[in-house]
Length: 117
Image (tube, rainbow, N blue to C red; front, side, top):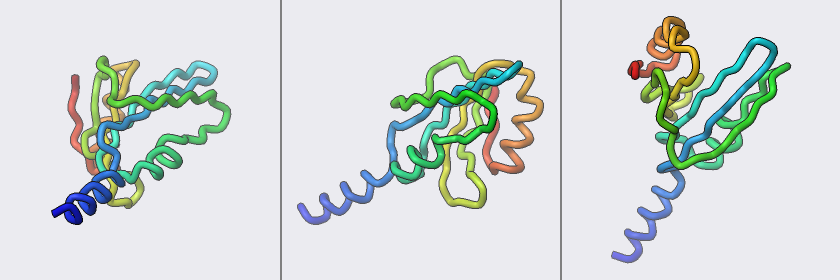
């Protein structure tokens, strides 16, 4: 029984439960804030890849939190990225009218479910 418990602990610890990153990017006339709530991405990959955007000409700040903060105008649930099997919830903050572009992107590109707040 102890062996089974140890195996389950190793398997579940490789997935990030209760892990998110808030990404705030700024440039001239641009101010975007999103939060990526990890669902099934291995922790190291989430922290070093998914939460490390390289946006040319933009100032980017990333903060790791246990869960995404309240106040998002929309969330793309179960979003996948670029053909990977991993999922995350992407919370959008700022200008709610952007949902006109983000909802179709969420549903078609990310294969997610759009939820307006």
